[in-house]
Each structure stands twice: as structure tokens, then as C-alpha cells.
Image (cartoon, rainbow, N blue to C red; front, top):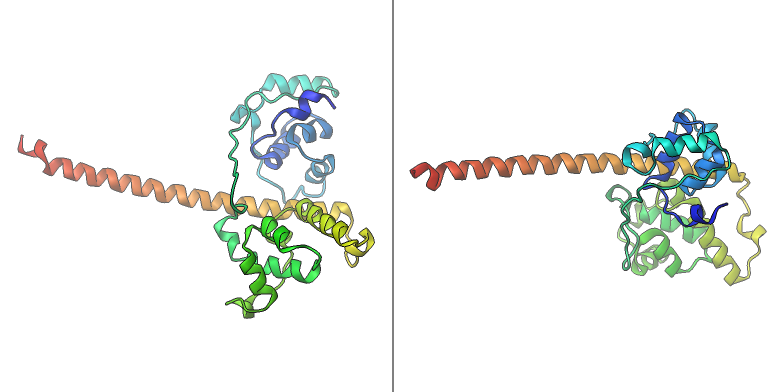
Length: 246
């Protein structure tokens, strides 16, 4: 793998971009995976197993992240590594918990309860960072003093879209290592293959992205309506103001 390709940023929406490249180009899975910062198995899953239910493709040429000429170079040479033309604007958070879409926040207690039940070796600090919650909430759920404890049902946070399977696996592995638990003990009871876990993760991320996009569209529509209303009010004030007297 070329050093430049390793260091360059990934597309703003890597899974959606990979879907578009799979559907609209003759690039190899490896080229697409490397450009989008994904594992090659994820790209293969998009092309094969998720053909009937996949991400809505995002055109990297339209967004300026790739040029048609760059895609053609990649199609002509399978060893060629695509180069990002215009890096997406990154939004970084230096403090505070991870952001969770409004539609997902009500699912946090269910995800916390699942981790407490399935992986007691994971610390409160790890859960707080993974789910984006507070230690007080975790303690309340553990001690069953949470105000909504009667309605909390343990559910896999990956399925809920609160985190990715890779993030969860990394946290569990780290906690297990600290607690001296073997890998076999950690994964006991989960006989899904890596490919099945990956497909489930992709579906969860897709659903989360679709809901987030829907929410964004609704917010944009509301903002447009408010802007139009303000313009109308300003126009009315203009008619009643000094110009009207003139």
C-alpha cells in the first residue's frame, strides 16, 4: 500500500461513496476499500450480500473528492491508488461525550443495559465514551434506580446504531485484557462469523445514516420556513415604516 494513500483523508461518507464506486466504476474492491478507508470485506459485502439493501450511493466526483480522470487512471491500472482531490471538511470534537443523533438518544439506556449484562468487565468510563453517556446514568441502570428502569430492555448497541461493531469489539478486548479474560471467554455464545457481524454492522450504520439524513432534511425544511416567515415579517415592517410615509 502506498504511503500517500495511507496518509490521505477518507471521503466524508465512506460507505456511501464505496457503494457508488462499486455500482458506477470498474475499480477493484481493494482500490475502493483503500480510498474509502474500509476493509475489503466491507466492500465485498456491499457488492454481494447487501445488493438488495445497501447505502444510497454518494458521487465523489460531484462532491469534488475525485475526478473522472482519476477514476479512469484507477480503472486502467489495478495497482494505481486513487488520490483525494479535495479533502472533506472535518468536524472535530475535543471535549465532551460522543454525539448521538436525537432519534438514538432514547435507545442509550437499552444499549448500556446490554453492555452491563453481556460484558461486565467493561468499565463505566469505557461505556461512557463508547455510548456517549454519563457515569451517573450507568450507575442508575446498574443499580436499577433509573427513572425509566421498568421500560429499559437490554439491546445490542451496534444494532441500535449507537456504535460500530469494531468499536464495541475493541472496547471489550481491551477490558478483557485488563481483567485477564481469554478471547474465547469473551466471544462465548456468539457463533456468528466475522462476515455476518460485518453485514449486521453495515446494516445498522445504514439505518442510522438514513434516519440522520431524514432528520437533517426536516431541520432544513423547518429552517427554510422560518427564514421565509422572517422575510415576510420584515417586508411587512418595511411597508409600515418610513418608506410608507415617503
